[in-house]
Amino acid sequence: MASSPQNTEPANSNPVGDAVWLKFWGVRGSIPTPGPDTVRYGGNTSCVEVSADGEHLIFDAGSGLRPLGLALVAEAAGQPLTLTLLLTHTHWDHIQGFPFFVPAYQPQNHIRVLGYEGAKRDLQGTLAGQMESPYFPVALSQMPGNIVIEELKEMSFCVGKLAARAVRTKHPGVTMGYRIETSAGSICYIPDHESTPGEHGGDVAKLIAGADIVLLDAQYTANEYAVKKGWGHGCLDEVVRIAREAGVKRLFLFHHDPMHDDAFIDVMLARARELAGPMFVDAAREGERIALKRSPVG
Ligand SMILES: [Zn+2]
Ligand SMILES: [Zn+2]
Image 1 (cartoon, rainbow, N blue to C red):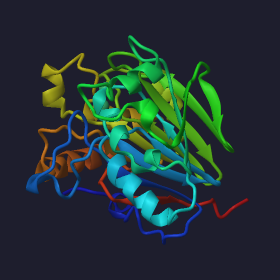
Image 2 (cartoon, rainbow, N blue to C red):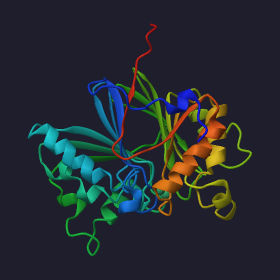
Image 3 (cartoon, helix red, strand yellow):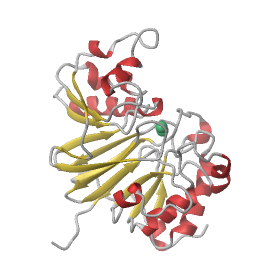
Image 4 (tube, rainbow, N blue to C red):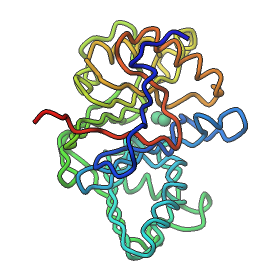
């Protein structure tokens, strides 16, 4: 496989204990895909944990939120958790883990849920909707954790010390992409976005400009995209091109298609690296932890 030295550098070589890091708990799009053919990249839907500058932030509540919740509870050992859950949108693959998030069942924990208005209902109503009978036995209002749901109105906001920015992405309904600034660099999370051929200077391109780490929807190959135009997901070749043009430092292909097994994603990654030039590119893998390092200068 063709790859530059930058591309083969291990992305998670930083020791545990770094101040700023993210961890992939779910990298799959649309529906969980457990099974022997998806063990390396993982089958859980969108969920990414970020620890930065004293804040504990979680992007999206796909099925990866369930194992993350178990890990958080084990680590906390009874001490209270303070967490912020930032949702891109309320499609099921981005909220289906919430009813199974164990920290939300513990009264000592504080969970702030942030997101924008749902396509047809407000954020609170949409999250409560998936827990209504007959879909689930416990109502959102019955979860004993201290859960505060806040619908964002502004496109710039703060999560504690972290400055955050949102843009609307090209995806059905109201869907956001986020950029957060940490003391060790910027992280962009854009799991659902249709990067289209010929796209230049759009909102997402501006959002990711010069970013240190970018997670971007790369669900389809160019051939697949040709028959799935308008479905709201990215075309691999365009995703790499847009990231390169924007001066992204490390690109992670995200929201893997449920039809793509590990071997297929390997091929997509090889293609992405052919197109990436000197830019680092990898495919997001469930369980992988990525550290951000402060610049040695300044
Ligand atoms: Zn999705
Ligand atoms: Zn979606």
